[in-house]
Each structure stands twice: as C-alpha cells, then as structure tokens.
Length: 419
Ligand SMILES: *[C@@H]1O[C@H](CO)[C@@H](O)[C@H](O)[C@H]1NC(C)=O
Ligand SMILES: *[C@@H]1O[C@H](CO)[C@@H](O)[C@H](O)[C@H]1NC(C)=O
Ligand SMILES: *[C@@H]1O[C@H](CO)[C@@H](O)[C@H](O)[C@H]1NC(C)=O
Ligand SMILES: *[C@@H]1O[C@H](CO)[C@@H](O)[C@H](O)[C@H]1NC(C)=O
Image 1 (cartoon, protein in one colour):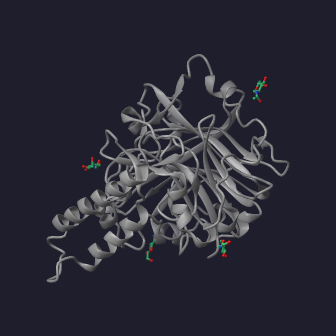
Image 2 (cartoon, rainbow, N blue to C red):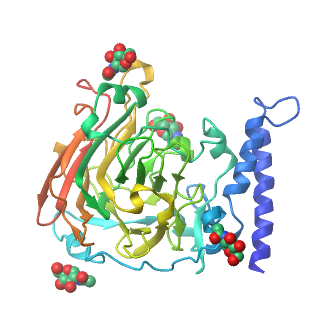
Image 3 (cartoon, helix red, strand yellow):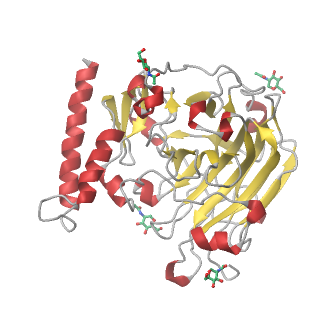
C-alpha cells in the first residue's frame, strides 16, 4: 500500500511541475512549447525527486517527502547498486556524546538548541528519510540545469595563497579559522545560527566546516556542512542546514544535500536543505547547532552527526581520493558572495552582520571547535590560524577558554564606510 501511495504521489508531483513549468515558461517557451531548459529541468526533477511514502507540508512552503531509505538518491550511483546501508557507524571518536558539559554553560551565556521548521507539521516514519522536494522553479532559477545543486568553481578559502586574483575571480569572501599540516580524521563545531541579509538573489551567506583533502588543485576533495541562506538555491531567505561534497574541486562531482548520488542518509528526523528554527536575535535569545564529521577507521566512510545524538548518515569512502585516507586541512567559518552590485562591495551580511568585537549575543560564533586526530580522539586544534580577505568588510577573532574550548567570533555587514 505504501509503495502505491508513493507512486500516485510522484505522478501528482510531475503533473504539478508541468503546470508550473508551463506558466513560468511563457516568455522562454519556443514555438514547440517548452524551451530546452524547461524540458531538461523536468528530466532533472524526475531524477532527483523520489517516490514518497508520506509528504509533509512545512510552514515555510517546503514539501518534505519521506522516502524509503533504499529509494534515496545515493542508490542511483552505479557503485552503490549492491550497497548494504550501514545503520550505525562502526566507530565514534572519543567524547562524541559529551556536549552537555560545554553547551549547558549555565549563567549569562544562555543558548538553546534548535530543530527544523517542518517538524511542526509531522515526522517521517521509521525506515524512511526526509528529503526536501525540489520544485521546477528551484531548477529553473539555476544558471544551468546541469549545474543545479552545485557550487561554482574556486569557492574554497586558500589562506596561504590569498591574493587579489582569487578575490577577483570568484568574488567570494571569507572569515575563517583553520588548521593544516597534520592528518585529520574529522572535525566538530557548535555554530551560532543567524539569518544574514542577502543583498542580491545571486549571492549567498553561509557558515560551515570544511574538511579538505589534497592541495588546492583540480582534484581537491572537500566535505562541507553548516547553515546557509541562498535565495538562488532555495527561493527564499531562510537559514537552512546544508551539506556539500566534491572530489574534483567542484568540477564534475558532488552537490549540495541529496541533490546527487553520494551521501547515504539513515536519519528520519533531519532533512538536508530544510529550514532551521528558531534563529538567534540581536541582543536576544541565542541558538546554535552542533555538527560533527568523522571518518570510520574500519570502513573508511565519513559520517555526520547533527546535535548531540542524531547520526545523519555517511559519505562512502569510494567517493573520494585524498579523503579516502585523511584530511589535510580543516576550516571553520563564514563565506559570502560579493557580486559587486552597483559597482560597490555587497551589503550581504556574514554571520549576524556584526563584527567579532561586539561579542556574545551580537556577533556570530563557532565554539568548541575540535579535530579528530590520528588516534581518533576529538581534541582542541593546535596552531589555529585565521584568515579574511578584507577585515574591514568581514572579520574573525579567535580565542579559547574553559567554557567554550577553542572558539572564534566572525562576520560583518559587508558594505560600510571602511569596506
Ligand atoms: C551487483 O551484484 C550483481 C549480482 O550479484 C553483480 O552482477 C554486479 O556486478 C554487482 N554490481 C556491482 C556494482 O558490484
Ligand atoms: C562527559 O564528560 C563528563 C565530565 O567531563 C564525564 O564525567 C562523563 O563521563 C562524560 N560522558 C561520556 C558519555 O563520555
Ligand atoms: C581585479 O581585476 C582588475 C582587472 O584585472 C584589476 O584592475 C583590479 O585591481 C582587481 N581588483 C582587486 C581587488 O584586486
Ligand atoms: C529576500 O531578501 C531580499 C533582500 O533583503 C528581499 O528583497 C527579498 O524579497 C527576500 N526574498 C524573499 C523570498 O523573502
């Protein structure tokens, strides 16, 4: 019965998408009806969206499809045809479930953890995973149907080679903390959550962890997770949980969330790309999320955990070259796209939109940043560097103390009289 319901559901989705494409396509349509882009978008949608056992309307306008775990996009990958889903990690780094002593932090710095908006209207049954449904307009907003769900090239901050060319080429700006020069088997952070303002829809603002393998060449490997506001990708200004991976520096492999085959999700509570809520308020309540990514030394897969106990799933080892062994650099922090609207620096905000020196409740932070070392233990990183292209636009200030471990404040307003 469940499967049948799923099929009906999918057909309805396809029908709705066609209507949508029709109306949206009025100006772009060729004499024959749909434009090439619309036809390609329809095909792409049918590949991405999977039959749902149940669908949940989210208050933000998203539809969350509960998809049987074995029907998720990962299993379209030829290498995963015979894959047996691992329902739990073979290994947890030491002190994995021990956020409580840090995050409780009784007293003035009160912070709360958060969930996802769609939970207000239901939950996915066991054996399914929640997937944010991709709509026709999502794909059509992308500059190309083929690149929908992918980052543009060269968006990784390269502290050592920070030169004007890099800033110029991509228009991406960062304020990050990082470690390099060792072998890393994972990373963790508790990340303050805000909703930065985006000046133009082709820009974004995000706060994330980067797990990087290889030098910054054409074969760079990267696993990324955090929160982002990206009007182009999602069609609104909501703050959303996201992941990303690539094994060739954003060229042909990888994508956001579950928008291609790769990540295998096992968790039925958290949807990649779904809105997180509530959001921190300036001089008001503060909210944060905890993200841990680590490598299972036995199977070689990279696992991800959200919060203190939600294991979301894993990236199979075979997706990567360098990361099949270990990471060579970890970065934590913010990134925005500056598209130089009106020939000036963008006013798109990073973090809370306020500079680090304003401190708790005003500036955004990463706290308890940790790495997984060669003994597979979580520990505070040594020799943390920090980097920003233009500190008058977005800045970063790191420190460490007993309550917060290794931490930093980061972000800024972008355009201002000094930027
Ligand atoms: C999957 O299993 C079938 C049957 O055992 C086999 O023929 C096929 O080669 C396998 N595919 C992969 C990708 O391992
Ligand atoms: C968490 O940390 C506390 C204090 O350091 C310790 O007593 C407790 O055993 C730890 N819990 C786990 C599950 O490791
Ligand atoms: C960007 O590139 C242009 C032309 O290549 C150059 O004139 C300009 O100085 C560069 N801007 C920065 C910030 O490096
Ligand atoms: C997103 O924010 C921009 C600028 O702040 C605003 O112009 C736009 O209408 C917003 N979009 C939505 C869907 O709310």
